[in-house]
Image 1: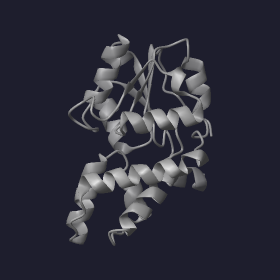
Image 2: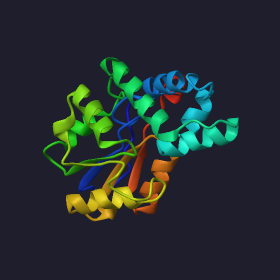
Image 3: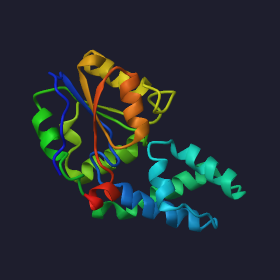
Image 4: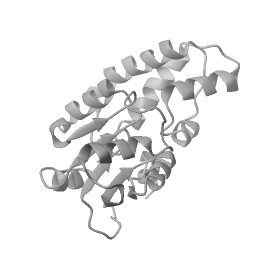
Length: 199
């Protein structure tokens, strides 16, 4: 898979983590279905991908509302993360992303900008042997407003000392692309697993 970059001279690369660097979405979906099955909750795969980029707590609250359930949000979120960790040894990088990380590493300032917890992002990047390639991690808890709000990307640019217009964002979800656009940044869409299978 070859990613086509927009024209321009970029001074920083910002990467989402799940689904962009780490091919973790299939593993997360497996963890979600396992965790939710304990509460009799269903989560269709197409809905899982449609909700990509939404905060975990928001997903659980929405599933509760849709299915008339009262799952404890914090407990289910912890359980999903615990089950995901069990699948981590199977984690691989998203095809086509490594050349861009290697190009930027040591050449351009780089950041990971994720809606996942710092612990989860660190574990994924460590598993892939990529943690040392990034100058900063912007994770859940570092900002108040989730994507599609631009806050997380703007914080990453600030930490890197680069103007937003000089940043290139790599993202796999609509919410992430919307957040990058709102931040005044160019972006590259990384195909999701189902789209890669179809191409």
